[in-house]
Amino acid sequence: LGALAAVLLLAGCSDNGDAMTASSADSSEPTEQTAAGTAEPGVLYVASALNNDPYEQETATSQNGFTVDLLKLIGERAGLEVEFGHAVNHKAEDQSITEGTAADVAAKVAAGDADLGASSIPVTEALEGVAFTEPYLHADWALITKDSTGYDDAASLEGAGVKVAVSSDEAAAWVAERFPEAEVLSFDHDLDAMMEVNSERAQAAVVDEPRLKRYVKVKEPHLQIVETTPLSVDYAFVVSADNAALAEAVNEALAQIQADGSYDELYESWFGEAPAYGSATRKAPEAVDDSTGA
Image 1: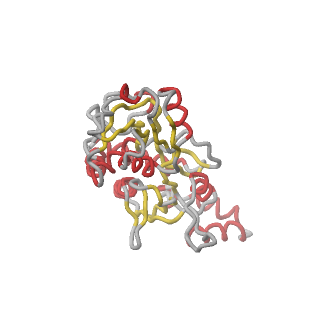
Image 2 (image 1 turned 30 degrees about the vertical axis):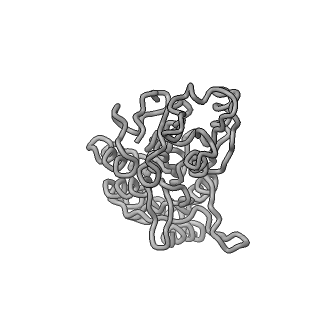
Image 3 (image 1 turned 90 degrees about the vertical axis):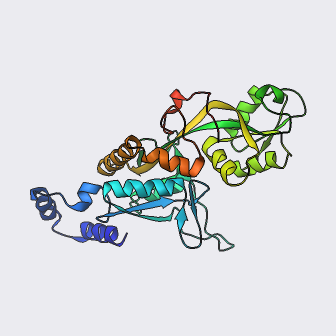
């Protein structure tokens, strides 16, 4: 970021701006910054909320998650060292770091304070000053239950007395239409919804399928997917709206990773078996109802 600040300072204070522009235009070789689309040559600075397990989260010593590992692979293919920073740096009254939102991530990128934003941002999100890369993850929504409780299919959830946990308004609306007699329990995060099912305070939940796979793989093997829904999202990275070079570099690296099997290998290491129909980045209109779960 120091390099970016220096560039902006020189651009704003120099009386010889035209000469600098002409000099750049006359150069036969593009600079590393121009070629890669990053502020600092050789470095991809990423803004993230770093609070979205298992995609992006932070420990006391490092950042980890599926998206973190994917970006490191992308960086290797693009010849960039990846560095992560918080989308929001100010502290709340209790001195904890404010979590940040997709809008916070986008604002940081649009302002030039980060090259790329990564915080599980759906491509349907309306954000200013940024453009989306190609999607890197497609997430169907999974209707889940706990095994050995008698709720082994969607039909068993039809009727009075059933509670379904959700973590979004869209999921709540779907449940209200699909199971009109069910009581909808709303939570802030998928993890809370899954815990309701695990503790049997709810009979079912509607959650992000990859996240559920990770939860099952690591913490709770007794949860099961009984149905997948077309209410699905594609996650993508964001770059500045005028940074076509970086978008192209990221898209090319992502395509290579998908083509050579590295993507599915990474997916399986985090979530379990990759979808049998190919890439976990299939787009929402192509979603199918035969996902195998974990």
